[in-house]
Length: 130
Image (cartoon, rainbow, N blue to C red):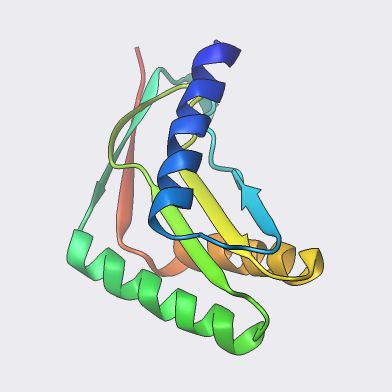
Protein backbone atom coordinates (compact mmCIF):
# COMPACT_ATOMS: atom_id res chain seq x y z
CA UNK A 1 0.00 0.00 0.00
CA UNK A 2 1.02 3.62 -0.32
CA UNK A 3 1.22 3.96 3.46
CA UNK A 4 3.66 1.07 3.82
CA UNK A 5 5.69 2.41 0.90
CA UNK A 6 5.91 5.84 2.54
CA UNK A 7 6.77 4.25 5.89
CA UNK A 8 9.61 2.30 4.28
CA UNK A 9 10.91 5.40 2.51
CA UNK A 10 10.71 7.39 5.76
CA UNK A 11 12.72 4.73 7.64
CA UNK A 12 15.41 4.73 4.97
CA UNK A 13 15.48 8.54 4.83
CA UNK A 14 15.97 8.77 8.58
CA UNK A 15 18.73 6.19 8.37
CA UNK A 16 20.46 8.14 5.59
CA UNK A 17 20.19 11.46 7.41
CA UNK A 18 21.37 10.12 10.75
CA UNK A 19 24.31 8.23 9.26
CA UNK A 20 25.60 10.39 6.49
CA UNK A 21 23.99 13.68 5.64
CA UNK A 22 24.07 16.19 8.46
CA UNK A 23 24.18 19.96 8.14
CA UNK A 24 23.32 19.87 4.45
CA UNK A 25 22.30 22.97 2.54
CA UNK A 26 20.17 21.22 -0.07
CA UNK A 27 19.46 17.53 -0.12
CA UNK A 28 18.16 15.87 -3.23
CA UNK A 29 16.69 12.55 -2.22
CA UNK A 30 15.85 10.27 -5.07
CA UNK A 31 14.24 6.90 -5.59
CA UNK A 32 15.68 6.54 -9.08
CA UNK A 33 13.81 3.83 -10.93
CA UNK A 34 14.37 1.87 -7.76
CA UNK A 35 10.84 0.93 -6.75
CA UNK A 36 10.02 -2.74 -7.26
CA UNK A 37 7.60 -3.02 -10.17
CA UNK A 38 4.80 -5.60 -10.32
CA UNK A 39 5.86 -7.00 -13.72
CA UNK A 40 9.01 -8.03 -15.58
CA UNK A 41 9.13 -9.20 -19.19
CA UNK A 42 5.38 -9.75 -19.20
CA UNK A 43 5.36 -11.81 -15.99
CA UNK A 44 3.78 -10.85 -12.68
CA UNK A 45 6.34 -10.07 -9.97
CA UNK A 46 5.64 -10.49 -6.25
CA UNK A 47 9.05 -9.45 -4.98
CA UNK A 48 12.70 -9.10 -5.85
CA UNK A 49 15.60 -10.65 -4.02
CA UNK A 50 18.94 -8.86 -4.01
CA UNK A 51 22.32 -10.40 -3.25
CA UNK A 52 25.69 -8.70 -3.19
CA UNK A 53 29.33 -9.20 -2.58
CA UNK A 54 29.20 -6.58 0.17
CA UNK A 55 32.90 -5.73 0.38
CA UNK A 56 33.19 -5.39 -3.40
CA UNK A 57 29.96 -3.37 -3.54
CA UNK A 58 31.23 -0.99 -0.86
CA UNK A 59 34.51 -0.58 -2.75
CA UNK A 60 32.69 0.21 -6.00
CA UNK A 61 30.39 2.66 -4.21
CA UNK A 62 33.44 4.49 -2.78
CA UNK A 63 34.73 4.85 -6.37
CA UNK A 64 31.37 6.32 -7.41
CA UNK A 65 31.50 8.79 -4.48
CA UNK A 66 35.01 9.86 -5.53
CA UNK A 67 33.89 10.32 -9.15
CA UNK A 68 30.89 12.38 -8.04
CA UNK A 69 33.04 14.68 -5.96
CA UNK A 70 35.50 15.11 -8.85
CA UNK A 71 32.73 15.94 -11.36
CA UNK A 72 30.65 18.10 -9.00
CA UNK A 73 33.04 19.72 -6.48
CA UNK A 74 30.19 21.51 -4.66
CA UNK A 75 28.60 18.20 -3.64
CA UNK A 76 28.91 17.97 0.13
CA UNK A 77 27.48 14.56 1.02
CA UNK A 78 26.61 11.39 -0.84
CA UNK A 79 24.71 8.45 0.59
CA UNK A 80 23.39 5.38 -1.20
CA UNK A 81 21.16 2.80 0.40
CA UNK A 82 20.54 -0.34 -1.66
CA UNK A 83 18.47 -2.98 0.05
CA UNK A 84 19.57 -6.59 0.09
CA UNK A 85 17.38 -9.62 0.58
CA UNK A 86 13.67 -9.69 -0.24
CA UNK A 87 12.00 -6.48 -1.45
CA UNK A 88 8.21 -6.62 -1.98
CA UNK A 89 6.48 -4.96 -4.92
CA UNK A 90 6.08 -1.17 -4.55
CA UNK A 91 8.88 -0.80 -2.02
CA UNK A 92 12.08 1.04 -2.93
CA UNK A 93 15.20 -0.95 -3.63
CA UNK A 94 17.54 2.02 -3.96
CA UNK A 95 17.55 5.45 -2.39
CA UNK A 96 20.24 8.01 -3.12
CA UNK A 97 20.77 11.16 -1.09
CA UNK A 98 23.12 13.87 -2.37
CA UNK A 99 23.52 17.32 -0.85
CA UNK A 100 24.88 20.37 -2.58
CA UNK A 101 24.26 24.12 -2.48
CA UNK A 102 22.65 23.93 -5.94
CA UNK A 103 19.97 21.47 -7.01
CA UNK A 104 21.31 21.10 -10.55
CA UNK A 105 24.53 19.55 -9.30
CA UNK A 106 22.65 17.21 -6.97
CA UNK A 107 20.22 16.11 -9.66
CA UNK A 108 22.99 15.43 -12.18
CA UNK A 109 25.00 13.58 -9.54
CA UNK A 110 21.99 11.38 -8.63
CA UNK A 111 21.53 10.40 -12.28
CA UNK A 112 25.23 9.61 -12.63
CA UNK A 113 25.17 7.66 -9.37
CA UNK A 114 22.28 5.34 -10.26
CA UNK A 115 23.56 4.75 -13.80
CA UNK A 116 27.05 3.92 -12.55
CA UNK A 117 25.74 1.83 -9.65
CA UNK A 118 23.69 -0.33 -12.01
CA UNK A 119 26.66 -0.75 -14.34
CA UNK A 120 29.47 -1.41 -11.86
CA UNK A 121 28.33 -2.41 -8.37
CA UNK A 122 28.10 -6.19 -7.83
CA UNK A 123 24.49 -6.42 -6.68
CA UNK A 124 22.39 -9.12 -8.29
CA UNK A 125 18.63 -9.32 -8.48
CA UNK A 126 16.38 -12.36 -8.69
CA UNK A 127 12.81 -11.82 -9.82
CA UNK A 128 10.27 -13.78 -7.76
CA UNK A 129 7.09 -14.68 -9.65
CA UNK A 130 4.01 -16.54 -8.33
